[in-house]
Image (cartoon, rainbow, N blue to C red; front, side, top):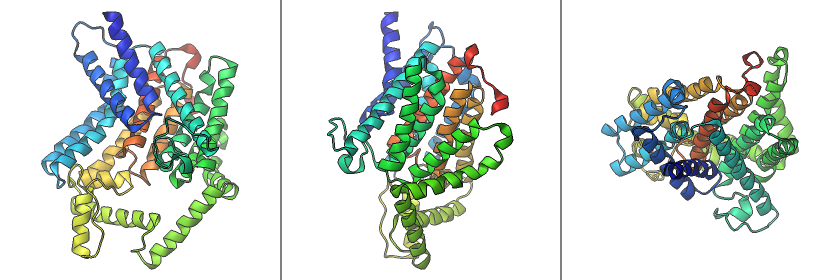
Length: 418
């Protein structure tokens, strides 16, 4: 019986790790199974507690997850959104629970290693599937409606471009953990393939920016400390190189410049950049109206429609599930200025916990956090289902692996190199 429970528990972990590269439906099933399994582990009496319970109790990231969900749950009392939608949005933010759930369910370094291997394997399949689509090879498991034109397998080119940039960093930084030379070069090759996805296949501007950031971080960490201050010039230099090298980057950012010019002349211009700027401007106004407690979970579209009604009767009514394409502002509208501080605190907490981990894991995990922060400046990445789940699972898997690996002498942390 104990063996069956062990097999099921580990199977849930591996399914969750693989789901980060699968469809939204499978991710949803994996999340439910993972959180339910974590509850069983915590509540089952007489069962030996996993070693990571100390990390669960002392780590800052799990604490912030609980605080975030409590804040959103409390805001149900005053939300202006329809209650069914507000509850649905609260459930969407439940993806945060996958991080502490992995810390609870995974018991040792072997299990954590298997989770990381399965995660990496699923991401490798996702990357290679996009290239198959690029060469017009049918991919039976591709569920994206525009798979043959956007080369995104399960979601959109926006999500998968960001994900590819993150995975490139993860493979690059963790290649030193490969047990053989062949796997080391495989991780190196997959990192380069992932960057190819970002700049050659996908046209998402946020993905391009995240890709530039990931390359910049990798170069900075490879330099001696005395060169790190001048290395602040790297991001604009790498961006310029990408702009003049890759047509996708040049076309998309040239288009953004034209859209900005159009917005300056006519703010009502319906362009990707113009719509974002309009959403952001209105979001700042909404935060100014309720700076202390916000308008409640799931309230952004309701409040946006209300304030637009006061300005003009000729405007498009947003669907209740719409978002401002900026996670920090969305949290500000829902929870006030405290929401912005709460999201920032979560990112800082993750960085603090990662600092205690072996250097390769720290570098990979910090890259994930930086990519998330950058993505949240231009998208509602934690609100959105697919990309938000990817970030939470990626961070949870790296934290879990690092916690179980930090006692291994060969992977000892070297703070002076950071």
